[in-house]
Length: 179
Image (cartoon, rainbow, N blue to C red; front, top):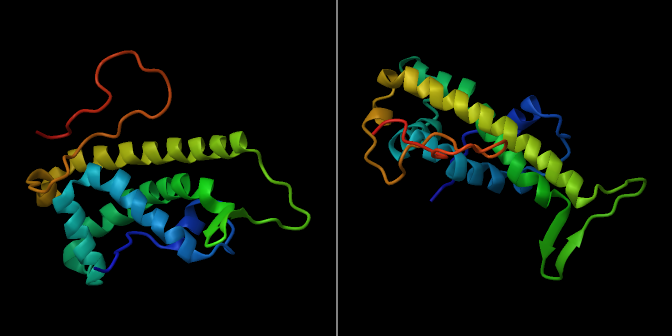
């Protein structure tokens, strides 16, 4: 089965300050994981699959799919970009091979301690969750534009993004967007 990615490495370069000399093949698994872990629970499987089919068929930008194209470019893309970086950053400095796990050492470079890397990951997570909220709000306000969202029959329940940082003062951490 072919893996369909909702964003490209160029989207990451557009939304972040990431250097363009990163190997794309190292980032792509994290893009896919961000889609499955963060995006699909918000969209629900039916809408996720619909957008995936438009992307794989290269029909997302056709005039009849304008609403889906807007959803993808304005709401899905930034969310997936920041969650991709959240997942990618901790693994960037390491390589796993037959010889074990190694860390690349560059001349004239100083490596950041793990707590600095964790702080960067947390920042990406915060930004990603804000874009998740924007995506969920847009879908709720425009649910009539996306019949797959309101009639989801897939396995994934649509949920609001749960708070990942800040204070918790009781109540539920996540709730159904639509029953």
